Image 1 (cartoon, rainbow, N blue to C red):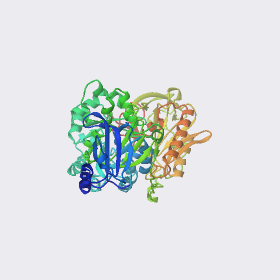
Image 2: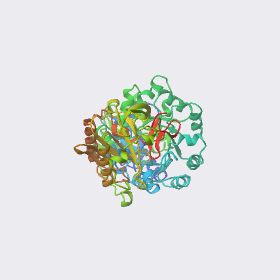
Image 3: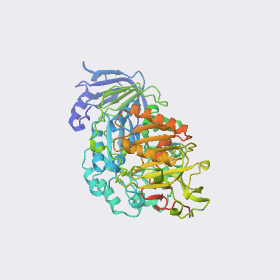
Image 4: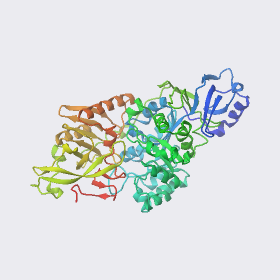
Length: 603
């Protein structure tokens, strides 16, 4: 399904349809128009569509009906603009752009703004271009933001590639690049780093949008400096004061509800209780697991959730449609049911529960009652995008041993106080905890009674065979097990969390064999596996199959004692060195408050 012609190429035809001089391609009759411009719900509305664009929206479109016009009866249902996801990473669904689109179209998503910095960290510009080109072939609008931080924190991690100002300048010439992806290196920005400022300048020179990422709770000078940098939005807020601060500084606050990030409820009170103007607040998902997409929904899930928090339905829909389109300079193309715009809309019988009954994209019915109504050819990735897991050697339990005297602990000590990464359920930040762990046979051991197990980062880009070891708390594992994943935001080495060093080695080696993915090992062997051969991040299988395998992973993790909501998503962020407080990278344990390496043993 091709992109609708430019407005200029079909303007006369749209005018002729509205005047009754030319028949419409499609007419939708007798619906309740959810007007995101006026905030009204207008009954008894007809819509005429021509060349994939709205030509007429009003009380009677009978003058636009011809012999070949396709008629759709709305039967007094709501006419809702197609939903937009303002910030997201396709790779977090563990599927390709094509499969992600297949999964979300039945949920009413007709526009996505994707930041492919995951594949960029593995394959560099070549990977970004692959996803850019795939996005252009979709039957819905999939715009791409050029990754800004590869690696996300220079000096604190080493990715599989490096991107800089020249790369951003090149990408800004590509037809489907809508702006700069989230600028995660906020310490670099506030320090005046030339690369960060150069990338922002290159984006603004093309009059495109700069995505923000300010993950610090500090709303003092550093926050004000970041706002001055040109970042136009930010999705890292988790508190009421975060959304208020961003809107006051002229940024659009993006409130996310992903598979594991529940940041809408505390922040939406800025509107429902404090009366802030909602025009500069946008809803997004950021990271959605394939299981969430298949079983729970996408942006329709976010809108429903916002309404459940007390937001007026039309306001919630504005935050997922018009506000997004205006933010990216696409108001004349997307985000509303109004003449001239692309004909993207949903038919729904309830504005609060928002059942997605019919989805129309670019004037064509693409889904009905939860089922895709069109064929989308499966994406074919080249061999160069596979076989990206290079361990350099076969790992053993010894690679995951933490030797006491190497950490400054006497081998004959009974215990040691160590820094531990503390997982916070349903949030991206972690806590920097101090816990005591036993010392035995010259090694620092885990303390499962205190919910302290081991975490390791295995280098997988340069085949160095290097392993960094530390401790993590929050997963609740109670039996011998190990979970390994080559999805490890953002540098995407391999993260292994486990309670048994031998099993950790087995899990890591297994991912080396299959070329990437997620696997859980227990004493009985491999309990679950999701193969991700494309850059070690994405499957080449259907989203439904990936979701089923991911569900097996959830069941297996629970059998090991883990009760966290979407624990795998939180596992995958343990190496993200741009979100406080404590992370693990290929450099070692990282203090993400001070942005510096730190010691495992507490000082």
